[in-house]
Length: 105
Image 1 (tube, rainbow, N blue to C red):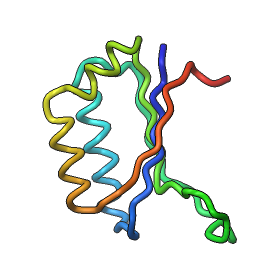
Image 2 (image 1 turned 45 degrees about the horizontal axis):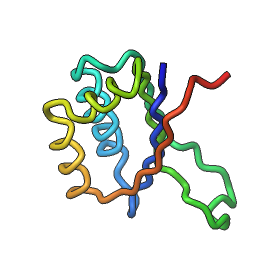
Image 3 (image 1 turned 90 degrees about the vertical axis):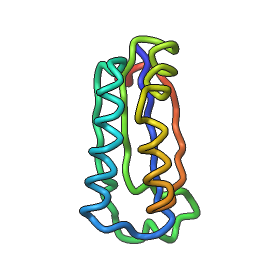
Image 4 (image 1 turned 180 degrees about the horizontal axis):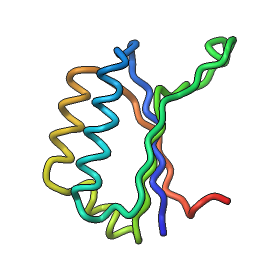
């Protein structure tokens, strides 16, 4: 199994309802692809003083588990994936960092 872990950082603050919808939309399109075996999304939990650290602070983390590289590529090429990504980029621009890795722990 491969885990695809995404750290999403919106350029500007995003309303809670929009963040919830973003997470739901991305998760749904990935699960609907039929290639995702596991899925989990969470909001960042801010701690005092972190804004002083010169690092990318993610707004949310999304993790999808797939069988292999072929399944990962197919999930992102699935109908609707590109549209959801472009919709949210246009509405609330964001940056993404990701890593593909074996399960942790």
